[in-house]
Image (cartoon, rainbow, N blue to C red; front, side, top):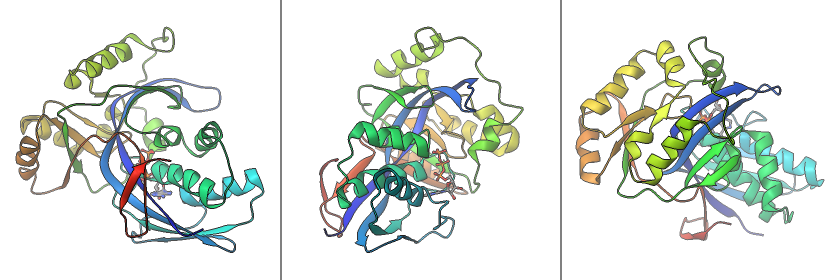
Length: 303
Ligand code: ATP
């Protein structure tokens, strides 16, 4: 089989709350994920043996620490498949930025190698393997506007966002998710969820569904990240003062996003940030897109 080319898209968390820590060490969370138009490109080429990664960004490990490597290895272990692969990674999503770049790459790898190696695994099996790789991976197999609970794998699709543009600020920091989750400044929500949902989560979902996006924006992890890097709190305030309808950190940071109702407004606001990297992105309705050839011609919906 010839090479397969996938785009894996970044996500932001419009809403993110942290509930109790579970016996397996993970936290239960309540979140609303949103795929955005920022993406990496991955080209998977069959190879006799071994998993060989190539990337244009030196921050990305190319060995077993890479989630692409781990996803490929997991598929080999699960199926006994002895085939190899070369993966060329064009990184556009900032690394360790709260945008699930690695998780999206892992999701693309599961789907692409299931085809390339002709494994015939079901979507349910890929989702289960995805969860072994990371809490965001099951969502990254799907994408769009999605509410999620438990570790983030129980997914409830929501309607598409309308008339929304995001200004992203990219502070030049890498934040480890573990540092934030173990911070003494993280005060978890100890409300016992009714039917799997706290009252606050239900209200946020209703606001987002009804087009009051700004009323649904929240991130519980900000207190921990802002204690570690106070400049992030200032950046969030600057997004509001510049005219965004709401602003928050994505995931465990450091990426911040501001919400705008038009492209023109997003451009005007982004232009005010001359001392930090910015992007303007739109909501996107899937996390993975297969391109029809290596040249990158978009084809149709995945998979
Ligand atoms: P999440 O939002 O899922 O917690 P993140 O966006 O904060 O993730 P990633 O970009 O996935 O962070 O990177 C987190 C860590 O994973 C980094 O330390 C990075 O070195 C490592 N990593 C492993 N595989 C990849 C990959 N394919 N792309 C980027 N980073 C990777």
